[in-house]
Image 1 (cartoon, rainbow, N blue to C red):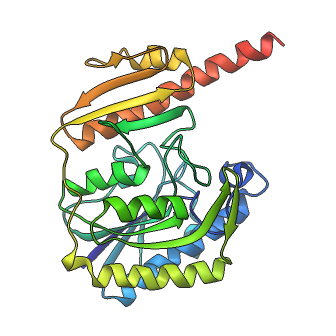
Image 2: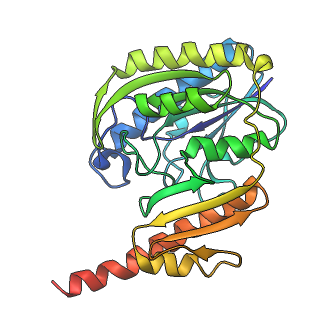
Image 3: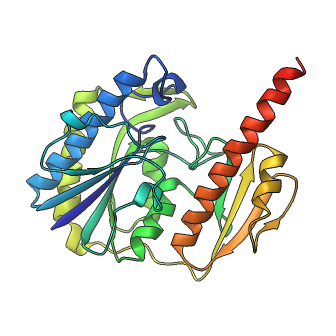
Length: 282
């Protein structure tokens, strides 16, 4: 059995502040260790439940956060960016189940460090629903028939996962006390929980169903800056709904991910262009 793991950082136990999740922050090296520890717990659980191969995709920020020499050597790792399928890169029909570790709530919603792909997005919707990164990545998995077996993170993302992924197992390792505040389990206890739940998800894989594919996929993103929305609206087929909001239909989940990757870059460029101008006026 092949098992796929996508691991983010914001939903890891012991992590709650921006200083921890941004490269260069004083808390970032400690956060790397915490993330790698939860990665190993999920890998160990998968192998204990009968996995023959495990592929783990580093899915946070620059996507080179896991400490390679500390990772369980039985697993293969994908790292670095850009990657065409982003947080789902390497996921394919050979995988029996996907496990999402360290995930978080959606942009504009309560949760520890909640966002959807970019801090320059104020909201991300598919159709009329605000979506988490987990839901977007689950659609990429669904086109290969791969179900989501496990989601770990705070109380908010676990609640969303239980509502949208059939038969999913969740591991709530912390509760949100604010956007950059959490009531968290001790990391060792969180790893024990993740190891147990990952094993359960892998054992249950044959009875899980992939997320149903919507009849249509329409991506709608709210941007922080009007300049970003202006750039994003230049994509063929895109429609600018108002000063900050752009919408575009997509034929499949791959194009949804392409749009998100492109608009992520557009948002970052707009922010970099805007900030020097703001500083110059002070």
